[in-house]
Length: 171
Image (cartoon, rainbow, N blue to C red; front, top):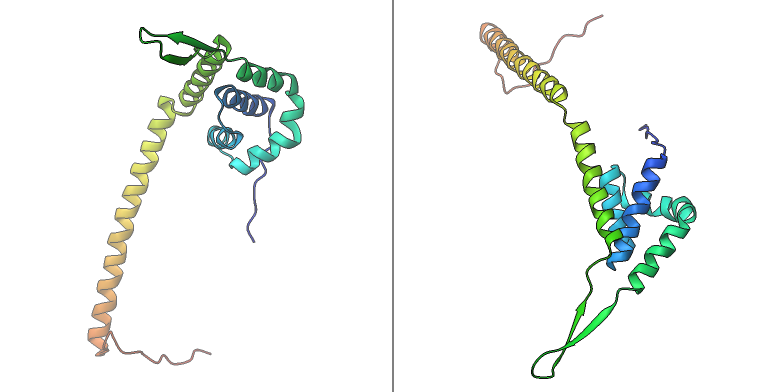
């Protein structure tokens, strides 16, 4: 029987999910992409993020989400005329708030990365790796020694290694 660990959602997790979805809305990308990105950041599945979104986060951050939708719709389109009177359409740059969201996500990612990869942890993992390597080497030597002993025993008893041996029953 396998046991699944249940990791509860924190306020920080909800905020990251909401910020990710908001930024995708403003950029005109899908919520599915937002759930995948948030899932990666939170070490959860996209489905878990989607469920959390629809059951809790969407309601909790409703005003912010509506504002993000308005920002998407308010992206202005400018029309310019070149010398030949052909129309060229350009989108305005993404709003400052969207840029701030991106910077916020980048800083958050670096902060998490810094927390995960501190020097002490790296050194500890390297020491553990070296210890496991040495243990593996020792176990291989022991397996080889046992194999040699078994081969010598077979030779002394005149037993072919490829034939099945019937062992006497032990009472």
